[in-house]
Image (tube, rainbow, N blue to C red; front, side, top):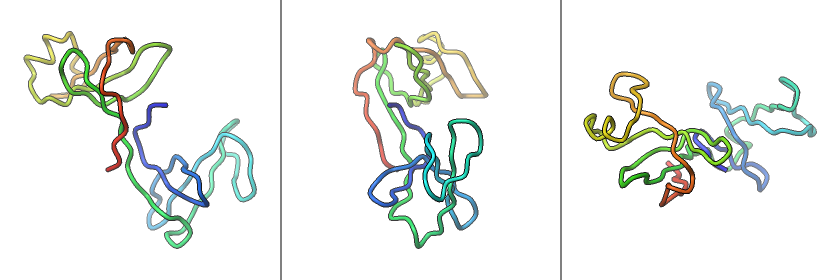
Amino acid sequence: MMRDGYVVAWQGSEYDAAPDGDNVRIYRTDPADGFDEVRPGRYSRVLTPEEYDELVYVRTTCTWRGAPFIVLAEANAWLRVEYTGGRAPIARQLGLEEFDFGVYQGWAPLHEVSDLHEQRI
């Protein structure tokens, strides 16, 4: 599973999360006590800082064609990656598209990616 976003440790499990002022909103895909359905297959609960153990940002990183990347998404056997090397000529040489000014993204075949791991920030 590729993760890029906030995660909260609560009651011995990790949940995808979104800061909500002083609180944090956590999510799950199945119903549970205290969780409200926000759309089909998506349930949410708001926790106060006293209720959860840890709030961290998790980012999946990798190397593709010798360059550093953040993994944004996964689809089938492909990864949506964002170049973090900071050199526009190299990004263009890798065939990446300029998603925004100075931000280069593309799709990398999973079998070509190495050093895939999560970082807790």
